Length: 243
Image (cartoon, rainbow, N blue to C red; front, side, top):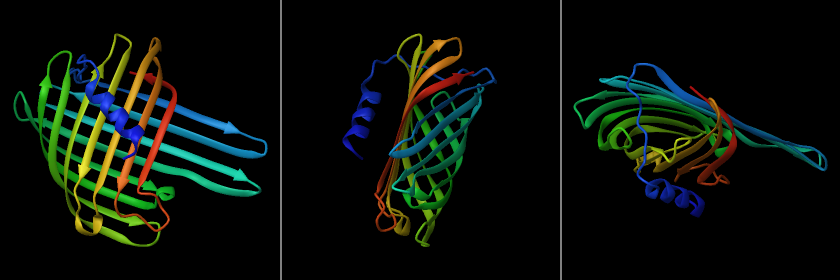
């Protein structure tokens, strides 16, 4: 990962221990953020990014759903280039095994042709542990195994079983500002290679349910089509709505 990704990861792990956990009230909570840019003249470009996540927690289990989209086009000298074409959707179900342990099962689908991925589908399951869990702080570690099927833009295909190891936490930096981060590593799975994913989001309440948002998403893959970079990053800033 690049220096900027590692810096933000360090920030997430060393920020003050004033964190927020999911409210187990059986209701859906989450947020949606949008950002974009439009330029015209000698160079024409347009970009749009959207990020959404929601979860429903009870005393026994939790359902989490998320989505990320990034679209970008640029036109220089009459030549149009696709700079971003990403869509990622996924979800996870957690079942509490006790006060500290939980099991989980998840699924994710992704397409990112600008990043060399025609489509990728994965299923996984495993167990996790709440390192810290109280009214102000939630930090989890988890591990498991899954199945991944990836089709690259150069026509190649790789699939098979792959382990995963990760950690995630949610933070409340103040009464109006919250931070979430998640880091997952997938060790070398033969044809699949090894992968790492990092996501972080920062939201500050402006008025009522409206927020100012910043987000970072980074994806690393050791096996990509020729001419494609192994690390793909997305940094966004925009407005959002929480519920």
